[in-house]
Image (cartoon, rainbow, N blue to C red; front, side, top):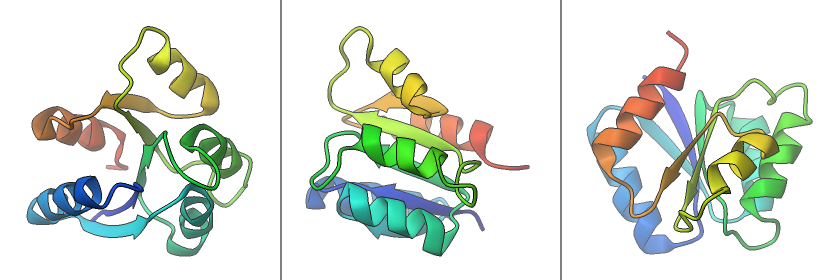
Length: 121
């Protein structure tokens, strides 16, 4: 069973997405801000990270850069999640070190396909 770290500060989004992913058979661990997300990437060693980009403490862009800068976490696939679907957001996410990008509200089937593509086989 793959372990996913969900870094999301919005309780409603966190609850909805974690329950839906658990129903699909994923183990979910959660962080509520960017700093905790960076810490948990190292302590939990998830198979994949879903990173909200608008977070307290440090934003998802900075959290991603820190995860990529750490030898023990740099290889973990990261999918950026943002409500801002503006032009350039995907490129900004990839530049920060994300492997992929998805918009909120999350369309579960599309997100699941991205997760499957990035999880180690």
